[in-house]
Image: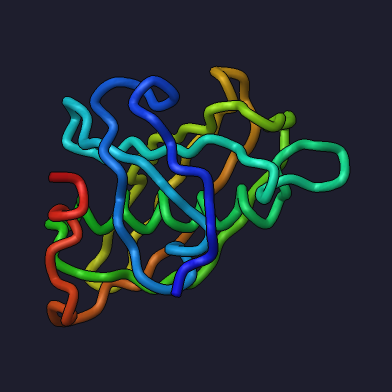
Length: 156
């Protein structure tokens, strides 16, 4: 059973974005939206709802870091072929501006380096185009494909 949440309308989400369907934790914290850009990397976003906010009516840092974790994980996964779920080894972030209630939060990650077993990525996450979070992460690249082995299917 998923928690109730406001369903985004096509008018409230930028053109070209597709709702990403997840089970578990992100099912109750989403919806997240995404697309693959011309560089072949994921662009992801979400609309800040009241349930995402702290008492100041801005997006809670925990939700922003959850989003950063998803964004960087998908960035590395897609960059290494999109066939593996990548657990997070390290995630850091700096809150550089607010993401107010109703704002569109969006990010595009950048792969810095991939080794045989680790992927390093970074992103600037914005709220209505203004910087909100600067983040970086390290993802573990498993030695074999995982059960959910086509992360790109979420973006199709």
